[in-house]
Image (tube, rainbow, N blue to C red):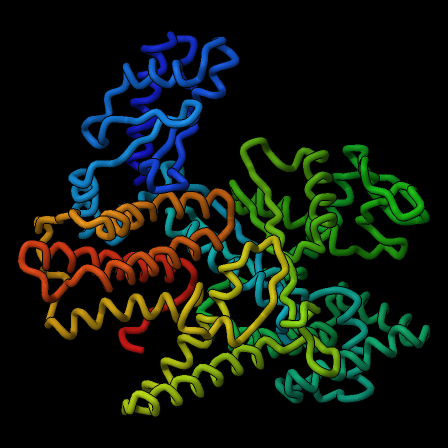
Length: 585
């Protein structure tokens, strides 16, 4: 319906100029989708805003605009309602023409961006020598979805995994392993990652409690930064092992990433400090090199600095993030950089972005955005953890989703007296189990916390992945039952929209482009989820009340086209969420 909005906006602009004069050219008509179908399909709300400027009642202004408005090609006669709303109802014949235009289009009428950009999406970002846990779920899934939408719109997207692969923790771990398990520093996979995590925790405890160990660990970091051969070899072994374990998770979730960890930016850190010093932003405080920004204070009200070089000459996360911004703009030539992390890092990125702007590293045409998200909570409303208080491993969470759906499916097969192969059960459980976890996360407004519930996310009813899948599978069932080849319905087959449920479904199908544009702009995937949920609801209502296979021609073919367009839209929309479909459930 993008073309519909564009057409109505153009016609309204002409009518406003004709009614009010050239001074009002370009006035925003405040054209939106109607919130209530009884008021039509679109609503223009600009008359109220113009009332004060013109000193006229808004209904009079609306009437003068309507008197000069020509939209009969696509709409019924516009209606004025309330204090001055202009309501538009699209003609069924126009809807049918629009549906016919998109049914053979693999993009379903969604255009590519008029001005494609180079976009960097920074997401997931686990730490080396640690297992991915539930805290990595949202960044990984949200980042993949946002990247998919931007790629679909035609942008050149670089998906970056800014892994934690450098710094003090490596000096600490390498020193501890030299004592406790030296084979891990010379032999690949001498330890399982789980065992490595246990040793990491012991190393951290020792680091916190033993000053001598702490000092020695810092010397190991110096060796690492100096590229000492033995230390670098040990570091690479630890990174490679973690990387392979991460990839297992990414493969299961069908997430593509280019790894570029903290270590990548190590050669550029000194230049960051030098540049900040040259621009006069750097201030020495207690031996550390800092930038003081307005509006940032500690609990006592004292200025809170952004430290870019510690008293011992070392660097920190802020330095690395500043180096990354410079590199991504100057070398990667990014037009838009999107950071997807938990909301708790909001102040950190606000400070980093502000320093980068003050240093004139961010051109006017480059947009840098922090996309924050809330916590994943247990059903008790508390931060989701294991009984021992540890963060739940992402691998275990995914395994449990698959196992739970498998058990549910087996129970349903027994109840329905259905026979299915083990391969069918395993594949369905894998696809729907993992998809349910993804969809449950993406369907929430990312800025909010949400309660993780296997029962809710695996339910066949409600705003869940299984419900979307079921709507898609229903269409495939029509194809199998009727021996229908949807590709052979004919591009010129007539679409007839006489029933209210047909019209409702048709209008919703044509809103896909607007929704994709919203997600591209606002980076809120839950809007796409809500659209697909409502599409599934509208299709199910249509299917249950409008016979398809038993209808006479040409209604039968028309309804088959509506079914096919619904399935195509669900498949495309779910793919943008990173979710595949099944042909049977």
